[in-house]
Image (cartoon, rainbow, N blue to C red; front, top):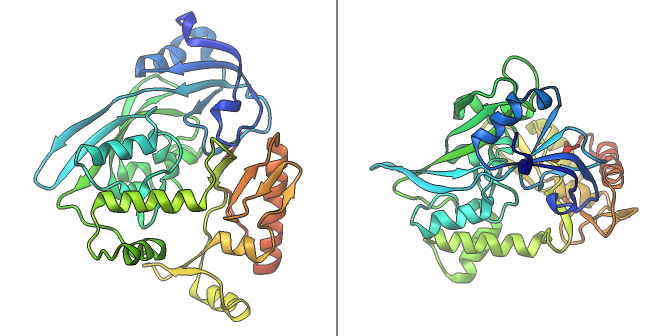
Amino acid sequence: MRAMLVEKNVPLQSCNSFHIVAKAHSLVRIASEADVQTVVTQPEWQEFPKFVLGGGSNIVLTGDVRPVVLKVEILGKRLVQETAKAYVVEAGAGENWHDFVTWTLQQGYPGLENMALIPGTVGAAPVQNVGAYGVELQDRFESLDAVDLQTGKVFSLNAAQCAFGYRDSVFKHSSQPLGLAGRAVITRVRFHLPKPWKAVLGYADIEKKMAEAKVTQPTAQQIYQWVCDIRRAKLPDPAVIGNAGSFFKNPTVTTEQCADIIARDPKIVHYHLADGSVKLAAGWLIDACGWKGKSVGNAGVYEKQALVLVNRGGATGGEVMTLARAIQTSVYERFGIMLEPEPVVV
């Protein structure tokens, strides 16, 4: 292994969007597939557990990281193919997600605009199946390349093989033989952006922006700008206030469960899904339990959006998780629903 690739006792405060203080005992900066293969095949590193780190926007560090941290920094953006039906574009896993979305629009390849300003890297996006304002990554996904952390072999997956679900994928499950959690490093991701482009609308915030602008047929660039404005108004900038974005998944219930909750809380925010189930707004549930603006130690609930937990300055991962568990308990006791966290606890 090239000595320049390995760093010891690396501070991770700037590598996680919560800005929690922690260290990596060993950190390897991954700039290519070959770098991953080097880590896997070198005898002195083979037996060490590995932890893959992208933008650090979806993790809660509860202490120093003992596994070898593979910091993915693979760059590059390109148009792979253009057909009459779509653009296929590719990005290195280390590219910043928002910067990549911006680039696609600048190049004239619309389709990702609803997912603007989502924090994190391109490589982490399929793991979480990120989504916003009516579009999920799986809706625009073509394929990805990854390196097996056990064999060092490069492989590719299509959408079906990624087993995408709501904020879920094969990369979040460790069960054999299909689970890939902790078993692979995503290196490149390709996206299928359909032609002709069609705006994805329907969310109240976007409809409000359309009304204010007196626009009935917005362009991709307009939607992109509106989404950025909406997110900036609602969510704290991680560079200013440490956070991991939406901390809990929006729970899904049956129509009967929803009707029961509405009977007790008529104002609950909910959305009917195509499969007949109902998605509830987790932020509304948390706010209804009185958590907005409250704190546990130096970890708190953001004043403008109850779905976001923040670092008020010097928060530990333990304080964040203590707050999260207290919120879960409150919501369960009042609504009978157990909220599921989005971030990975390390």
